[in-house]
Length: 248
Image 1 (tube, rainbow, N blue to C red):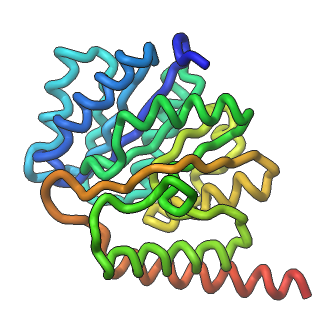
Image 2 (image 1 turned 60 degrees about the vertical axis):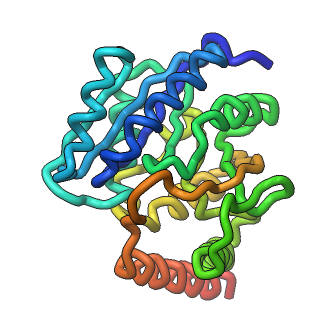
């Protein structure tokens, strides 16, 4: 099924990704051109001192459909997606909204395949999954794999969601489906990723998974700290207990 005529907004949160954002933007637009997708890219930058936002802005000269949201400080991953999604839904005439990391760990060339998969399966959201057949990790890191699988298992137990990879941050949503989610009620941090899937499932929307290989970041270090993991853990335990008592 061809992708021609399908409009997609790709939201990319950034903080100190000056070494990576240019490569990722170039790959996004190249993939879009090769598949005849009409793509907007929304970069949401949390006042990166390394000039990430300036690099993103420079791409407007070559690719007209680049929007850079400059925020005053670090406000969180979920907060960045809220701002990006809101702009996409209110200002851009797009049918689909995607989320993608800025460090190259989410291969942009996978995006057209994800969109095709979503349409073919008549789904409302597609998650690029590390834990379905054909998915995996592009490098060996025991600690990273254990942490990821542990967080994913905890999220699945907490929410009861029957998906293999609830914590994957590489996704495409139908824009009209996102309009049913009260974004303002969701967490501004990392747990946003699980909360939004939980909300979609509770409201009866169809979510599918397609395989992808999670790649090592191109350059630099991960920005996800222990405080966000602790917040994620507490939310999962609270949600799990709430579901247990509700069932009783």
